[in-house]
Picture 1: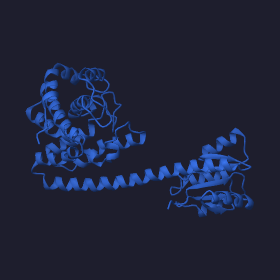
Picture 2: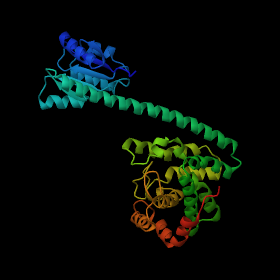
Picture 3: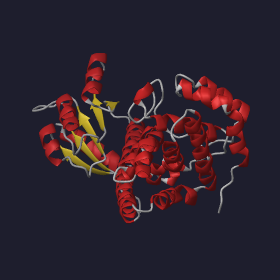
Picture 4: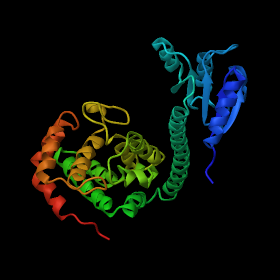
Length: 354
């Protein structure tokens, strides 16, 4: 049985409370009345889904009442509909400024009351779902992070094996992602070699780059594998994977894990400072992160993902070239294009070994 919404009605005229209570009860809601704003604040708690408040009341008017609600951490997000005879623009603007969500004019029209209350209750339900989801997400991330940190502690002497263990999460969810890890590691190795890095650093980048998206272990499958465009809220959740990855790997003591942490945290930064999570620009971005950004984007463009079909190599290269100096380090992009034959050979021939 669906839960009945709980609504607080605030009005200094008893007959108005009786009127609204009768209508709202017939609409399937539980109603609590309060004869003024002070009494209403004493009654109001997280169990309420909506407040209907008069504006012109003694002791405390509706404007001050709404402002008090918005200042209270426990109840600040409960939607408020002002029930008013006010028609002046300034009065309505003032109500919006203090935090009112909507208006109903007196005398009450039942259809309007039903429409506006249902709209506000729907918004409140969506807010509650998001909050519940965030709590569950935080608990899941904390649990998984603890598990991974325990694994790191046990396997610290087996660096490469630890990396394979961490990356198994992506392989388990998506075979295409597993192939992506192998290819982008090879692209990263090529770039690192061609710009003249020493062999040890090249090996570190090659071995550690598959950990770039390990933070996605804390992203729900409903977001990670969504076949369509992400909403703004979902994109905000997805972007957390860079920080999650850096945090997960931050307790490692090996050079591989430290390199992986740096790459996880920086591979979505952009040369012009418009990336995330720290809006780093230019040489502020660690070199391994700049290298892996190019490798990651090129392979993502040319691969099928849950949200898109693969672009052609030609179209992908056009996008890569357009990204020089804004998304990508222009010197690294130059090296990338100078070694296209080797890059494309990897793209066509690298297969996952089972």
